[in-house]
Length: 132
Image (cartoon, rainbow, N blue to C red; front, side, top):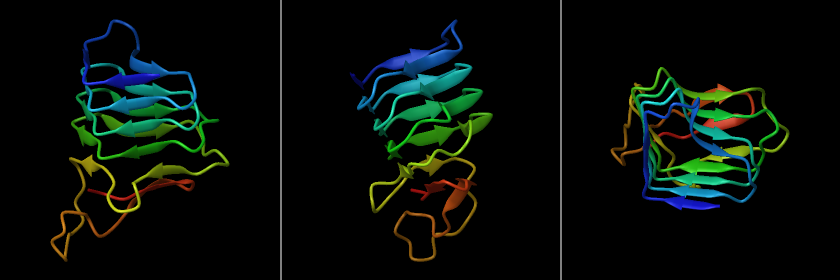
């Protein structure tokens, strides 16, 4: 599945977008005012460059999701930016090897001025986030 440049907001269902298939891609979408912005059930998905704001949960990830990449996304004013049922065996990536995501509640420093926070956020023991 490839889903790009859509606005998904105020969905009557619990999910703004639910991804069940593997190797799915979400690029540059605006996801706002939903209970859950993006629910991820499929492995090896890419979520890149999306604006995920004002949801109860920005991204919800099922416990068996593995090898998915989320980067260059902007997380604003979600009650909870990310929720993972439980860490899976396969590492999910929150960066592209250089930069990660923007989190509006990130408070650590950027001492070298490159626009990337110097301290990663650790949400779970299996998920590493590097801040953009």
